[in-house]
Amino acid sequence: MLSISEIKTLLATPQKIVITTHHKPDGDAMGSSLGLYAYLIQLGHHVKVITPTDYPYFLHWLPNNSDVIIYTEQLEEAAKLVAEAALIFCLDFNSLTRINQLGELVRSSDAYKLMIDHHLEPEDFDDYRHWNINACAAAQLVYDFIVNELGDAARMNKDIATCLYTGIMTDSGSFRFASANSAVYRIAADLIDAGAEHWRIHQLVYDNATENRLRFLGHCISNKLEVLREFNTAIISVTKEELNRFDIVTGDTEGIVNYALSINGIKLAAFIIERTDKVKLSLRSTGDFPANEICKKFFSGGGHRNAAGGVSEKNLEETVAEFKSILTEYKTQLLQ
Ligand code: 5GP
Ligand code: MN
Image (cartoon, rainbow, N blue to C red; front, side, top):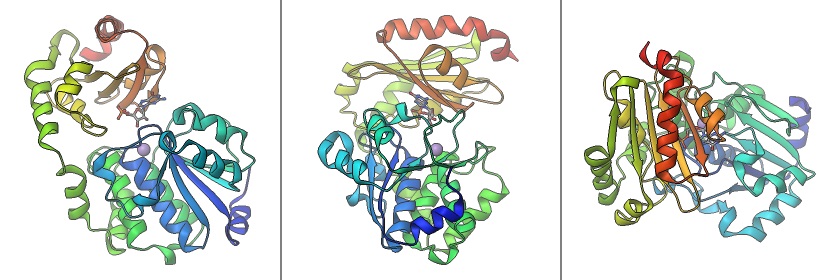
């Protein structure tokens, strides 16, 4: 394992650096990555952010977004950058399977691998780890890495602050989850002082929907919501045909599961969606109910206790039926 002083020495001269983050990056994945990017370019490093896949349009306004390389769209360029990198930062994930084919390239690279993450059960592939499951966002840990570990608060600027604020805001449910403690609010205040325009960031992320997305949301709530009171569970499932009918693109389905969870008394919500290659599940829960346990045990996935995801090789109908049958096992916890 590298010590922080060894990292400081490495960062003292210009290096080739890759920053990567998880499949279908969300606000925290892109916010933490582009926040760290904006810091490292100030030090004169050659830096690239490589995402395994595309990501939502409501994140494309982030500073330096045009410098991001999407692996699936630029395979050769991405592979070359990973092979030549001296350092690879892995942000907002801790298992190489979370970055698809890019995972094997990272594994076989000679670069030092630096993990900055807040998920449970990290895989052992890293040479440095700034990891804390109590952090509300990877962006919070990137802030901590720059300001406290590297002691470089002087280099905080508007671009870094804007990106890190976005990551913290999105992963903390706009500062409403328990993980958003007073320390998080202090960091947010510091980021606002450094130039993050909190009102503008909120608007760009949350008030940026297409008309299609809103009509699709209406369709999901009016026609697709199933409330299973006997399990305090609500399910929304959607077919490929519906996604096509509403012209749904990456990002449009984000957050829909939270509407199912907002019904009073509902402890577990599932958004189950038929993608081109497989069926994807997004689970959200309240209190102590372990949504990640269901994803890990039955759907080759994982996540946090109250927000988790996974996939199924079965078709949509069978996946919904399997999910419902699993609920019996958790009935006592769901009815508590
Ligand atoms: P979402 O429902 O927004 O796709 O994901 C919620 C959380 O669950 C993510 O922050 C991530 O931690 C986790 N997650 C989602 N999908 C997967 C998956 O396929 N595998 C694992 N290990 N975690 C996932
Ligand atoms: Mn995160």
